[in-house]
Image (tube, rainbow, N blue to C red; front, side, top):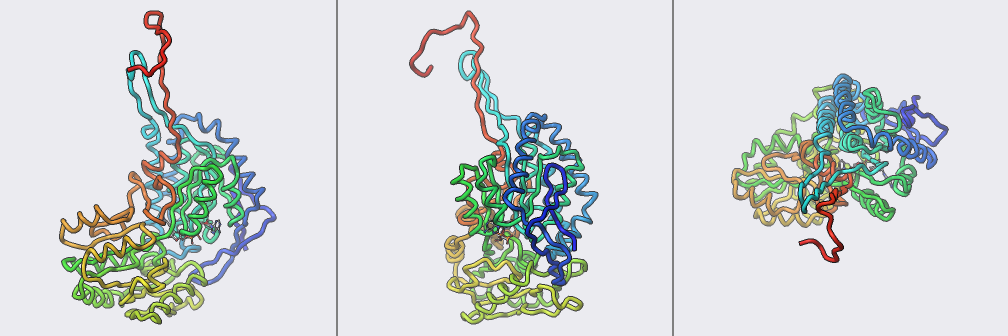
Length: 496
Ligand code: NAD
């Protein structure tokens, strides 16, 4: 039984603390456990980050960026090991893990541009002989709290950018799959990061609450489910911290009558069932406009789904893996059953699939449910499993109203050949990330990621330009060097 500890001040830390088992969801076995940090361990990590801050703050941005360049190379060199750790604890198939890692690396690439991104703004002669400029200063100790579903990518939405901005960081990864995150943090030290600039504490609510209330922590980035995001945002804000808390989702795709249906079906397959639907950008609801589109969509999906394969991460021919825990598998199955009991039709039933050689894995097969209505429990909540629900409506306006009425507003997509309809949709829909014939409109690293409504608490989105703003505070300096010739007398009004 190996024990996953903490990484504080550049050192592996093993302590006598409570532990939690880490499972391989494809087998249901556990040969690892993770320490759950006590308050004093988290305080030690914060102290280490605080001690590293003054020197790191004054390290030239180009030197900080050079460490990120080396980090990127190390991530690429060790990609197979990282993907294996993700697969073993999260369950996602190796090609999917590689995609996750690549999107994480893209955030490191963006962070490499720190010297340019931190240049600030300068205005000469805002008044006679007066210059003014704004600079972006680091905040100090920043904390990140991340979910299980992207153990490599989501932490890299946060710490590379926070660190190149001159902050020091305490990361609290998901306790369900912490190994790849720990491995990546150590690679950054191998790349030359000074001890204390990035610390990783494993743990649960105890660790999180310490980060939220300790006055030395100046800002908190969170990604996870909406109830916890709301708790993080209100608690961090009440404790005087800057906070961005990204929450859950229920992403709808509108299938217009003029859509290229074969293309829409292909796109929906990957977006609904990839990563077992455990993505905050998963398309989990297809809204068919008109019965003809609905009938065609369901018939083609049903046929296409016959070829899908659920199985262990180690077999790259599988399309997707298990869900994260046996409790979560049961929850997904119960939601499928509730839809059936409330009047929907389970067209393809993924409950209890047989996966040869893996009788105890937490598998749910791809599931298609037709005849879903907004009143059904399975429609209201985020299922976070390989389940696509079909809602049928008569008009595009009705489809848009459905999306706007849902509590979440993370991502959405429209499949159509009509440019005018697509433009109207993207202009008016109350959702933060919109795809037009693009099922997973995840912004690239040099834009920023975030939903609307109860999918994000806070103002600034994650990573990209908003990330730079989030991890810095603006200071504006106005300067004049009076010379004997231009000295002015007393003035009691603004100069005009
Ligand atoms: P989660 O909310 O259960 O956990 C996220 C983090 O919060 C973990 O580090 C966990 O230890 C911590 N946490 C859990 N309960 C807590 C509590 N009571 N008090 C304090 N901290 C607590 O989320 P998860 O199950 O790990 O991840 C899946 C969720 O994350 C889904 O809802 C998914 O949509 C969401 N997600 C959102 C985005 C996004 O960008 N909006 C991205 C990825 C995942």
